Length: 295
Image 1 (cartoon, rainbow, N blue to C red):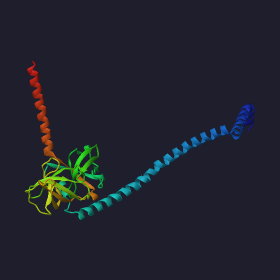
Image 2: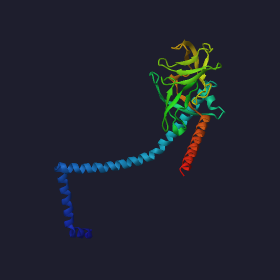
Image 3: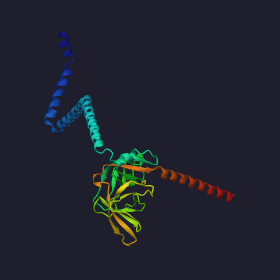
Image 4: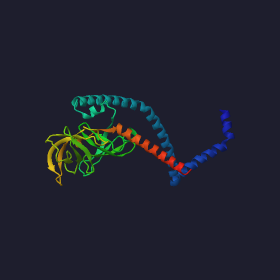
């Protein structure tokens, strides 16, 4: 105790200095609003950072519980998806042309499944956007089909999305034929109802009946032959009287279109590749001939 008193006696001026500093600070911040606001703002910033750090630590440890809950939720949703997929497969068993197309054993036509992300029906020039693009092997001018018939032709592509010109577009022009009869024409749409289109330029000597099935002709590299388009509803004469115009009931339900399939023609791609190689070789031979001529 005596040593403590001696220490305080020797350093009493320091204690007096600290006491006066405290009193000055209290008087300064209590009776001066500017210094007081600066102090409390700084204090709030510091405390805010402390609270943020504390909250971050708490959130980090709470992620264990959140992850467990999300995992359980995902397991539940996966079971629900599997159950609904099974019910959908049973409800549509043996009725999906798309499934038969995807299981086709021929290598000529390959397919890329996709989903519709946006579409329109009430315009003269409708468009459809699908969730597959160049990264998935989709290219411009590829044909698009669904489980009940043709949909349209790919018009624009990006890395992961594509825009399709459907049958319900005034610029659509698809070669089709009457199944089992060999006569063909071109499918057009002029607006109006979304389940009807017209097959133009059918020759006058063609023989057919109401209810005959219209399919793709296969005369282009877009669609393979025999893909379902619709049925003949009514027959008209063309404007010039040289051909028939057939009103077609489309089999594709564009109002409920969800899943589609983009098809490719491997044979055409191979022919294009060979044609490019042939042109390159011919250009090289021509250039070699020019060099020899001037040597």
